[in-house]
Amino acid sequence: PHQLCGSSSSDEVGSFTENNSFEASEAKLQNLDSCEIEEENCYVDDEDEGYYDDEYEGPDYEFDGSDFNQQIDLNQQLEYKFDDLDLPPGVEASVPLLQKAITDDGPGNFKSMSGKEDEFGKKYRFFKQFDTVEDFPDHHYAKNPVGKTGKGWTKRIQHDWKLLENNLPASIYVRVSENRMDLLRAVMIGPQGTPYHDGLFFFDAHFSFYPARPPVLHYQSGGLELNPNLYASGRVCLSLLGTWRGDDCENWNSAQSTMLQVLISIQALVLNEKPYFNEPGFETDAKYANGQRRSLEYNDTTFQNSCRTMLYSLRRPPQHFEDLVAGHFRERGRAILAACKYYMEGNRVGSVVPGEDDEGKELEIVNAQGPSSSDVVKPEKHEGAGRRTASFKAKMEVLFEELLMEFNVKGAHTRKFCAEKLKKSQRDA
Image (cartoon, rainbow, N blue to C red; front, side, top):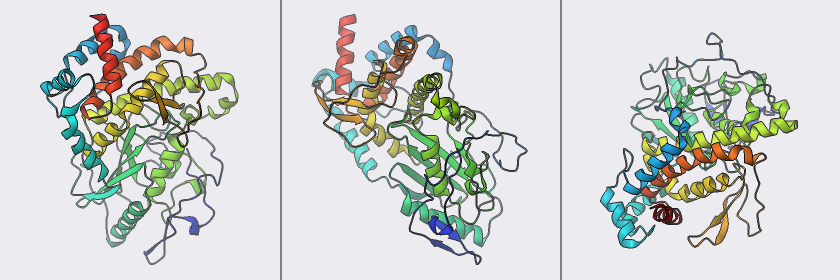
């Protein structure tokens, strides 16, 4: 997508004057609706001056998609895995602890997890949206040289830090390094009403030639492609970054563009409701039934990959975001599992999911595109749901089992799903 045009420099988050001083405006970004988004070809020629990323060295996480091709056998294996409570690597809980929670307190009444819940909850509540850390040993660009720096460079970086600290939307978190001012890590929560809802998406940034050139951004993809603009290699395709052709007003402006703009542009323009149409040339298909059908199918795959990304984040949280990952999925785990069930029933990915309490009574809207409502929500069925059910449901069942285990360990409210799991196991015994 393109960076959208602004009307004047007074509308910018910050401006760069001739004497290298900066004046923060009223903390407004360029109006994201001020000009029309025109999709154009994303070019990947390494010799193009607009691209400054380093060579792709493989995914951040190892992922073998072949295991999802054997759904029946794998699902049975996960049944045994769950029943035996063989927890995945990195989990800070012992098997006897969880077994005691199930046998002593009844299915899902995890009293023995209360201490863990309090620990996760407290750290999550006090997790700052913006903060400085000492260093980033696991940062994608940690081994890159700092590059040319000076008084003006330092002042500009600090100016961007201040903008981020004061103006980040609630769904974006940022950490910067005291020892490596050229490094930044950000995570954004996937917007509701999209196939990215409730997911955590991490980006590493490098400011080697800043602000003459835009920051270089790497998306922690885990080897998965969730969007036409977020490559499996980690490349981020955006006109503001110089990796996507755009009009002059959409490209990087060394005097006015900021890292805050970059992050908000990704969230607004990339993580959208129908990412299929981000693909160059596909935007014209939106007016045709076949185009809308392909968009729904793309959303199905995108949500599955988003679920896999959740698992990677839970098992290997990026440094300095461990508390956010644990707390976020503790809070949103139940809603994510409810969404998985809802989508497996044939409803559209990203559609409103009615919530239920542990007795199965409807409570609220778990995933809504607006405030919760007491109105009855009509399910949004996936067009062609019959055709997609077998493969989609089989893959989602596998992901559901793994997510349930991980959320359970983090203290999420999974009692209803654990009770259903126990009943099913007893019936099958």
